[in-house]
Image (cartoon, rainbow, N blue to C red):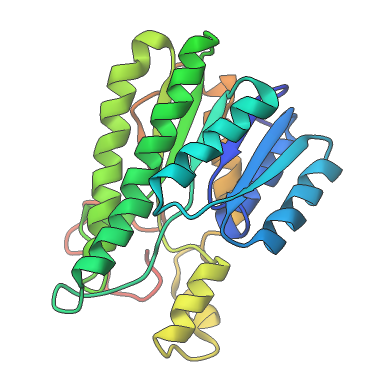
Length: 266
């Protein structure tokens, strides 16, 4: 079991899904403090209570990540509460869909701001604190296999995840001399509350999840807890000097040609 004992961790998008699972897993594995952030204050306070019940301190900071000032406030609140930050998980993302023909400037800009600029700003401010406190920190960016290309309905989303993957590697290279590690996880198809909303919006049948899991090689989609365990490992000292890695976490092996044409292989 990976250990993040006594560490202070920021997890964006932690009011539900993968982010919530990451916050809870960090607390389960000894984190001293976890900053919960998202747009839904009711959900945020509920997750905060669950984290505290696991023995960690926690605060909730409401934030809209498309707003640069609100991004910076997240890290400022962490610094004010604990005076340090040991780990950052950039999990929040705008997963809305659109083709090249449908994507508006406003849609593109918002997705870029949430999925790329926000992780950049959060990383920038966390790194300043890590360097100030001489902390060998760890940053984990939640990426997507869509960042390699993605379906046609993921035009701007795929672009943001490709950009975040490059940012991950660039930052890992720049920060290694400070012993700050930066890694990413290229997620495949994951069963999250957000995915259920997207599927409903695009008119998928009520049993879409059952169909998808039956068509999947391992008989199920990724679950938030699966991802959280890997995130905690990357945040912990057990991952050693691993940095600049973008780990494919999917049932589909990237690079296989011709690709499988079955629903659910992502």
